[in-house]
View 1 (cartoon, rainbow, N blue to C red):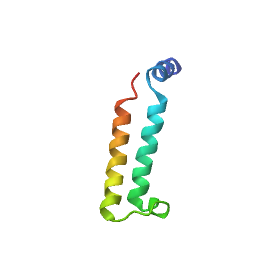
View 2 (cartoon, rainbow, N blue to C red; view 1 turned 180 degrees about the vertical axis):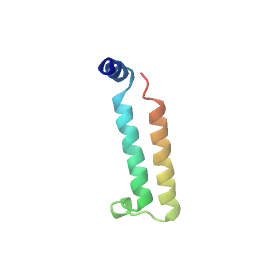
View 3 (cartoon, rainbow, N blue to C red; view 1 turned 30 degrees about the vertical axis):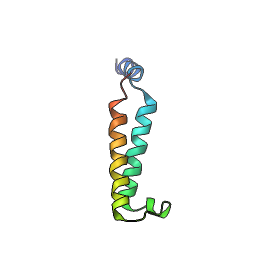
View 4 (cartoon, rainbow, N blue to C red; view 1 turned 30 degrees about the horizontal axis):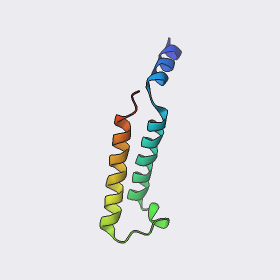
Length: 68
């Protein structure tokens, strides 16, 4: 019963969008923790905050698109 429900769920979810949403949220969290600054030199704190907000917005938009 549970396996049948999982198979139906996997047919209804676009896994590419789900993976993109997880990636965008991950980048946002890593930026908040300061790890991304080792790889991307931000010009100021405002740019870093904007990058974080845009990452979370992109993740939210991708979550809205996971239904086929």
